[in-house]
Amino acid sequence: MDLPSRSPLAKFWSLDSQCVFLNHGSFGATPLAIRKEQRKWQDLLEEEPVRFYEDLAMEFMENSRNALAKMLECDAEDLALIENATTGVNTILRSLVFNEGDEILVPDHAYQACRNTVDFVAERWGAKVITVNIPFPIEGPQVALEAIMAGVSDRTVLALIDTVTSPTGLLMPFEELVRQLESKGVAVMLDAAHGIGMVPLSLDQLGASYTTSNCHKWMCAPKGSAFLHVRKDLQHLIHPLTVSHGMSFPLGDTTRFRHEFDWTGTRDISAACSIPATIEYMANMVDGGWPAIMKHNHNLAMEGRRILCQRLGIEVPCPEEMITCIATLSLPHSGEEGGIPLHEPDPLHKVLQDKYGIQVPVWSWESPKGRYIRISAQLYNHIDEYHYLADALAAELNL
Image (cartoon, rainbow, N blue to C red; front, side, top):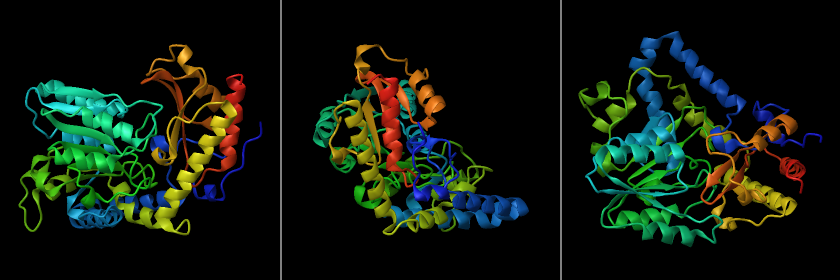
């Protein structure tokens, strides 16, 4: 089959022209202009490293936090610049003190790396992990809301909640979950790895105890850029994973939270310094800015899902209101065999990649058991790419 058409905007990325890239959700993809922006910061650092770190870095990081705060509708002083959302989840969970018998609530659609952190911390403190089953397919957000709230007990102290689930691509009713959980005295660790640039976030209004999100995914910033938001009343509890000079440095006119997170040792902060330019550059790429980008990507994901369902003869697993710009589908007949073990590559993934040049995740999962495929939609994608994927799947699955 001939490779499909590419979006007119694909030229702003350096993605391989022989690759049909439908997997933005895993690691994102950074535009050429932003990669040049990052190199500018790296060059500035290496021109005079001491001056960069001792005289300039704090101002640059403040500029990035201010740019993020405007987009996130929150106080910039409540933001810490970190490397990725998994770091954010680890930072919170490994800072908190739990009592034996405390319960940590986790939906079974949680990202495995974050679930591993919950299990690690729970074992260390003698806490109990309560896993809530979220059905898939699912009728609507109310089902997820009721299932999670039904798992709350008088021992629940923390809940790990996704904005959008990684394995199933479901937009969770996270605003209402935060409201109900926090009102019951349950602190919410909002895993918004799929968050900024994908869904609107108003953190002060949301009121979650803790929120973390990757800037390198749907915001398209360089890899290694993310943020952690900690509500002011809880900042005294939270420390970075790397304890450094900030723990004892004189406060001056700032907070201990700021001191500790702004300096955790020598690290490449060029990705974080590139955040303001990324926000502006992406917003100027299409008329209407970020709201238009989110709408475009949602509409493209929905059309891609429709094409696959129609071509493969499968039912949609959730209503449109639970889809942002990634969508997961169960492959036909996938429940008839045991599937591929979670940590082993699915042969279909390699066939799609090697035979058709398609980069899209295919994996087996236990909840419920089956084989799944997840598509992403970003500005560089074209509707023909989903037709191409559908034809490839139909051929390989003998449909």
